[in-house]
Length: 216
View 1 (cartoon, one colour):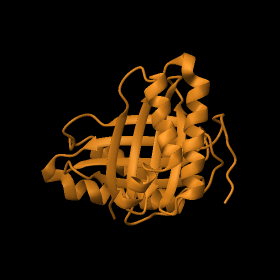
View 2 (cartoon, one colour):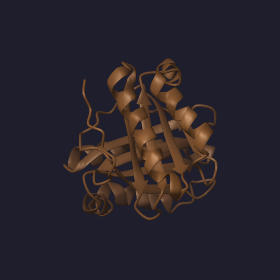
View 3 (cartoon, one colour):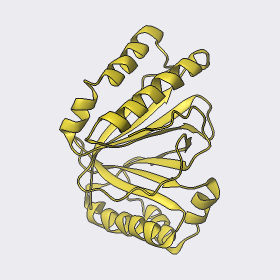
C-alpha cells in the first residue's frame, strides 16, 4: 500500500471534542449523541466521520472525532435538526465541566470513514515551537505513513492543524484493539518519532493524549 506524504493542510475539517457527563445523565446523553452521529452520517452527504467513544479509565468521560469535507459543511451540520436536538440537550446542564472542542484542517484527501465497533482510539493535542515546525511535520508524516502502510491493526491515523491557533496540531488514531496500538509504539516509525521528541523538545506545553473505546 502506498500513501502520499502531504505536508500541507488543505483537506477535510476535523473536530475533536471532550465531554464529562454527569452519571445520572449518561443514558440520555448516549441516546442523543448517538442519534446525532447516525443522522449526521445518513443525512449529510459531506460528513465523513462521526466517532463516539468513552475513556478507557474514566467512566462518563467521552470523546468525539468528526470530519467534514469543508468548513462550510461543518457549519451546515450545526443548522440541522439532529444537531439542534443535541444543542438543546447541552442546554440542560448535563456536563460536569464545559466541553472542550478543537477544530482543525487535516492533511489528507476527504474519504468516508466507516463506523467501527469496537475500535481503540486516541485523540492527541500537540502544541509545538514555531522554529521546529518543518522538522515536526516531516517526523509526524513519517509516523503517519508508516502506521497506515505497514501496520495491519492501524485503521486510521489522521492529523491536522488548528484553524485558529497556528502550530497547534491534533491527531486521531484508530486501532483494532489495544494490542494494535501497543504494536504501533514498538514500530520503527514510532521510535523515530520518539527520538525526534527527545532530541528536539518540540512542545510548548506537554502533549495531551486521550485514549478511548468506541461506543454504539
